[in-house]
Amino acid sequence: LLLFYALLPCLLFCFPAFMQHIFFLNFVLQNSYFTCPIIFVRNTDFFEKSVQFWLISVKVPFRDYNNPNSFGVHSLGRNFYVESRDGIHLGCWHILPASLSEKLSDHKQPLSAEQFEQTLSAHTYPVMIYLHGNSFDRTAGHRIDLYNVLSTMEFHVIALDYRGYGDSTGFPTEIGVVQDAKQIYRYVKRLAGDNEILIWGHSMGTGVASAAVMELSETGGAPFGLILESPFNNLHDVIISHPFAAPFRWLPWFDDIVVHPLENSGLNMSSDLRITRVSCPILIMHAEDDHVIPSKLGRRLRDAAVVARRDVTYVEFEASRQYRHKYIYAAPELPSIIT
Figure 1 (cartoon, rainbow, N blue to C red):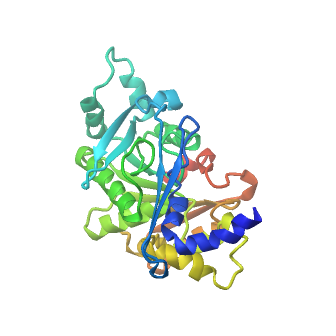
Figure 2: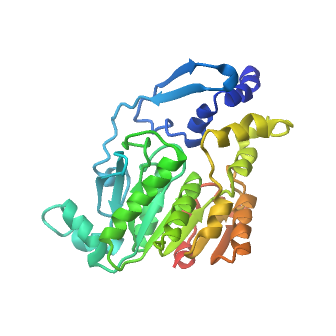
Figure 3: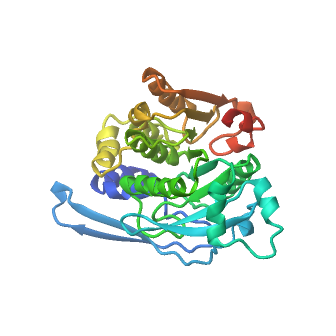
């Protein structure tokens, strides 16, 4: 273990692309998958750091995404795929609002894909696009629990697996996952008519959501609202605050060894800059006892929005409620906060 901690900073400095795998954690899968990390290294010139580093996660698809109810989703739902502009197939779920689901469940025949899409505009229910954090996929237990809460609140829920997650093809990069979020927004916008569309990001997904909504705002197509659950303000602060960084953050060269190589490899995640260019209302929620992303980072993100005179609301839940990093959905006042 000591040897691992001693070598890890060197690995991150020499192979920053490896750290991107750690950041996205798309190779961490549910227990019904077999994951085999395979590393290929081609070292053309070490001193120029032109090292190509790949980590391939081999998935044995024992998981059937076609039936959301088999994973604990209460309302009617369907599995579908959207193709990105660069040819990536994105796995998604559409979960109906609870009352609409109850009404349509009386049909003798299962709803077709076309009928599911028609519900997005034919009924005055808002739509929530959910952008999850790193690791696992749209079937993770805490995400299922949130879908059920949102469905009970009468939202359509569109749950996306970014490229490289779940059964989506491709491999995640920051630019790629932001494009995936925008592609799903365009899909929903085309079908939702005048119904409100909101984007909810959690953890890493708050960085994706902030970037996507900033770009949508700049083109005059912002959603009705942006919800950021357990967010961070920027890449530097979230890395240095993460529990995994505890053995290293005191080192004077931590930024040069870990943070700067990550930035040079293509990671940005500057939500504190991007949020200043978001034109829709913003809701930030954080738990005081968040053990992964400290609530102080959520407050810093709020402060950046306030300084830029954005329409932002910040809600922090007391540590005594034990919501930690991913259980804010359990707050009984959540419907009144969101609506």
